[in-house]
Length: 297
Image (tube, rainbow, N blue to C red; front, top):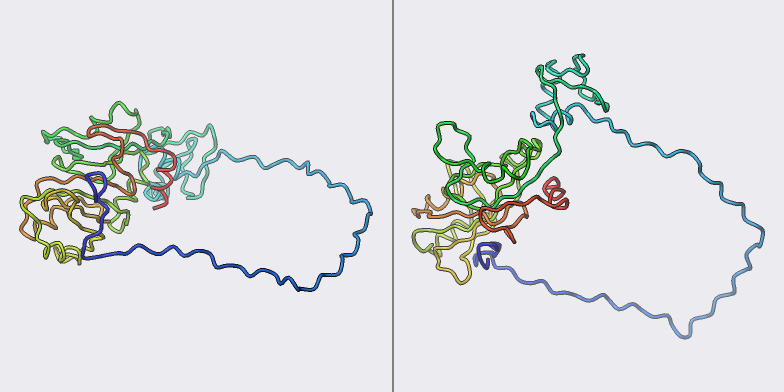
């Protein structure tokens, strides 16, 4: 790991070598003394039949959309949760209760959910480089400023952060109104990689680094660490850590279990997204390819 934007260097406990690039195997040439083949017979010169033009109309792409997706696109809940509401009779289309899961909504249909008319929103995906002193908590009695303040100018859609982050943790945070994606990245078995730069109150002993690299046990749960290393050209208080757990609190808990105090945590990579050209406190919309990558994880 070279700096706060690149924390992907493996620990010395897991040495790796560069693979060799092998060239293509040489192909055998034909023998100069091979026998010449007999000439091919002349093809028939009969006129070929003209191709029949296919004038059949192309199928028109339907604008119909499944009811659960329509509800999800409205920002109410995820598709899976929408299925439960549909079966419970909470959804109406044009005034009629619909309990069929495969029901498709046509353009112009009016869909109501618990008496409120739904209007699907365009899906928005925003990446923020979160500064300190902002929290993802929605607690009304909290005096901390909320991260939504930082992306308020980006869209009018009802976006939410993916995952939680306390006020002292900085770095990458994704916002979206795609409830299916929010739910996907909140699952305990979600395996997208996250990379953190951690600042400790004292140098991390090499033997402790080795132990962490082998995995740690927290609250009777075994946690596997993808990579951990010292950061090049930095004091040994600066550590790079790669995990797949969605819980940021685990990062602090790992080092505290070895009696280190964590001074700072900065998430420098989230599911392949990086802080490149994104200063602290700034945000940007994800590209189409980045959105596809997130959906395919």
